[in-house]
Image (cartoon, rainbow, N blue to C red; front, side, top):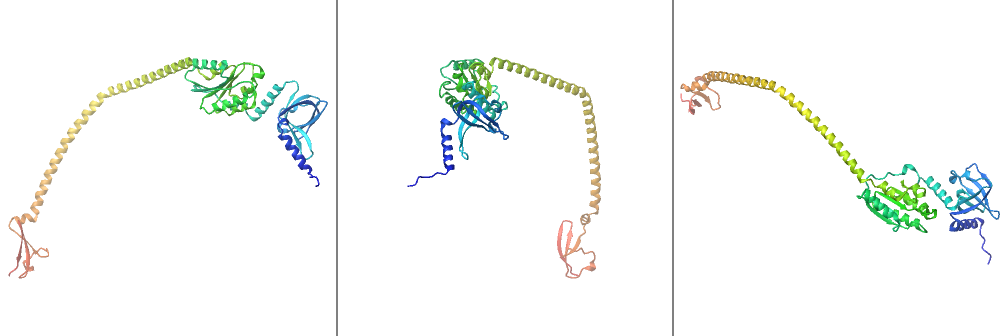
Length: 394
């Protein structure tokens, strides 16, 4: 049976996938001396990192070359952070550099600078995203060790300055292996508690003890918090990445509690001052209204004599007008009576009263002449008190 033959591209692809899947070859620190340094016009930087016994080709791509190229120089001993990869087309093994630090700085310091540069590039440290603390918090979260003095200090300050605030504690181990994951989880849990602010605190300690607050999960949990976070880690001289990402940094846990909690005595004093200002303003408005009312009353009193005289004139004119109206009505009644008499004298009914009658045909036409009638004609006689039918006989 003939052996299986693989094309080169399949072999190099398999090697690349094998290398990139190996966690021992990804996200690691490597130290050595720089040689064969080439700065390409594309912005990429190529160099070899060696230690006298072996050498490794390295590349710092332009996308990661922000402020780092000046740290690389021919013959300089450096520490680089990145991952191994294989360039399939040529089968070249290269170390893809994400961060460069001069050798001798120390592993923790180098990692701190690498993460700080990464967070700065991603906007986690941007000043414009910092949120102000609430003026009068009702619910405050606290992430700290359940056994340290921090819990007592924060509780004491909140109770003394602003007892209206309820403290919600998410206990977490704050040093040692796995502490960063526990701190990040506590921050995420408090983010679901509808708080006004969160205090992240621990007391002082060595750089190694404070290191969990420099780890990436903690910084990203602070950045993702829905409410402002106050970082109070270590002493005032200590600076962690949690301090840089947080909305506010406090030198101590007690200072963090003082920052988030207003002093009730000062608030009471301010309320008193505002109440006095409001009372003064109200008194001034009342005085101004009273003065205007007094002015209206004075003007009205001054106008009363004129109003009385005007009222008398109106009453006199109304009386005179009433008499004139009565006289006009009486005269109109007299004229109406006279006209009625004249109309009555001219009325046909007055003639009927004297014994006369009005003769009409059946069709209602008035007979005004005897010649218009013939024997046996039917007529109607309209008398003073009624109507009678008649027939002509001759």
